[in-house]
Image (cartoon, rainbow, N blue to C red; front, side):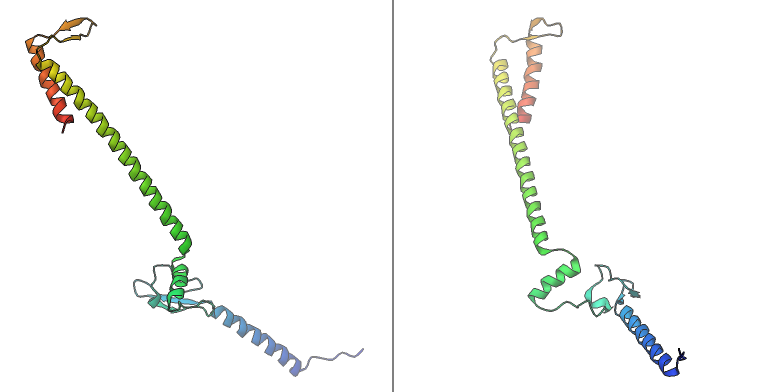
Length: 173
């Protein structure tokens, strides 16, 4: 069997193939380069896209596979999804849920306010009835600390009238 030594032509073809593959690989990696100007004016270079807060006008270079936003209404929706990373349908659902939650919270607060208003109205009515009884001159009795019944004298009646008027003034506005 005869051995053929590699010739310059065969090495050249092989070398040329290696060179083409190396240049192609370099071009492929160069295609995934992003360049943008940050908020301080410095040029940033990365294989990842710039942060969301970088405006479109400050992106200096993007990979060939990444498309620039297209003008027009359909493109603006696609661009807003691409730039903001938010799906418009998902955003609409989230806004609807927030609106429903705010309405439920408002209804809950209105129910609590109505309950407080009713309690104030009842307190007002009781204070007016008590004040009418105290000012009517009839004898008023109440239980003391020992559980015994005692009748109010004139001084006790005057103190009770003053306290009841304060309660009525606070709740009957």
